[in-house]
Figure (tube, rainbow, N blue to C red):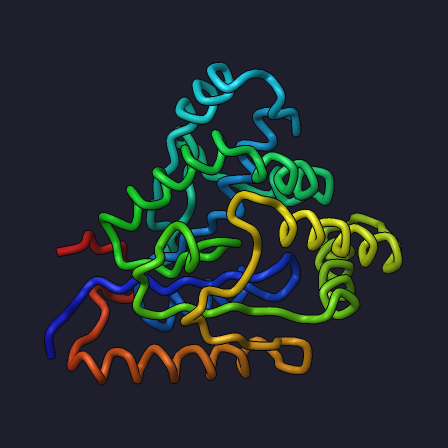
Length: 240
């Protein structure tokens, strides 16, 4: 069986389960996972949510953030300027900042080029908002994960409570609806499924159920090409 580079995209709104599923899918395929949402969050953290500083200064700041992937205990990790991107970008405040910053054309263009540069070297599972529509439009496998705002709010609340953060379900649901509206209605790269994406509603599925749907589709794509994605479990293998 031959090996070929594979890009799998997972798009969808916040709280649809993309991060969890992307990690599991990448592990199942033995290829790296690229969390593009964390890239936007890291930029937003650097800017403290303020992208209104002029295009020249903004571009300089964005270009000065160098993103890469590394292997850590068999899992890929996102690095920014050589430092792992961690929980500091996972707060609700930084998430809202990222949603605002992501609508800036300069930020999107710089990060799109950074994401494509990573995709030029590795087979990837790339998770975000516009992976299948803008960043990797030629990806072999595209998925769009969705769930109701109420389900996503409950999931988010559970995650935050596990970290010792306290929010109300109503406040989180309102925040999610606000972010959904901003992401779906923005003029630049709005949140929407790619025309050739497989849409999966995760509201009534657990992680393993969603993973089964995705891996079955990827397997069909691989079989139709009589090939298998390059990369081995626990490694980050450059594209050939």
